[in-house]
Length: 337
Image (cartoon, rainbow, N blue to C red):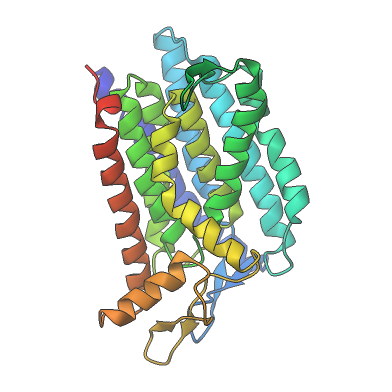
């Protein structure tokens, strides 16, 4: 019976997101919160910042789980859960401000964005989250004490939150990536005796699956930074609270590569492709400034139409391959008895 009840938070997250998005899409159009669909020749207007409904669904499901734990069981993880939720809410709120300021206008400046995102990690610092033992070559395991909370935790949260939206700009890409990475981390949490963390991760996965019904090509709604910041911060927070930073960083390899490629273009080159009359995309620049551009080149080289859908499918396959390799490399630390 208890196992069946624990399915309810996932169902709540899915249904709240599903039905609230229908309302949001209509409302966004009525207030002109619309963005162009950049990978189409005819750039229709699509409802923006739909990720706020993903957050709503996620929070409803997660809070149902908290209430269930509080009223029917004793839990030692309440402080951790509330800290996690605060981090995600703070990050999402900053993302929403960035959305309202407008990505074409640059949104928040890079310096102000990073400065504000530093405060997102405060709830984790306040509860002294994570373990301060780190492995250093030659020296072995070293306890760095409070430096872990004051330095490494903010770096991890800011890094994941601010770079998750780099691999983006294609219908369904961000939400699908979130489903893959958070599902993988949810499995890791489950097998490393952090079932509560796994359930919260799958609340977000459920909300993202509902969002994908409206966001996959052709998109009716875009996520915005309100969603990408939330996902990035959740990934970092799970890694810290679950003490599986290494495998989380490994799963994040596509974003590390994307950050390097974006840095080649001084973070000003867009990820979008160049739409063609036949519905395919060409590379927008002579050089590659993102995995999206690389995916277009690969598809053309293997004679598969470089449509927006196929670019997204290829990037999802790459992320899945990274995850499977990660499970194999870290299997001894994941599948414990």
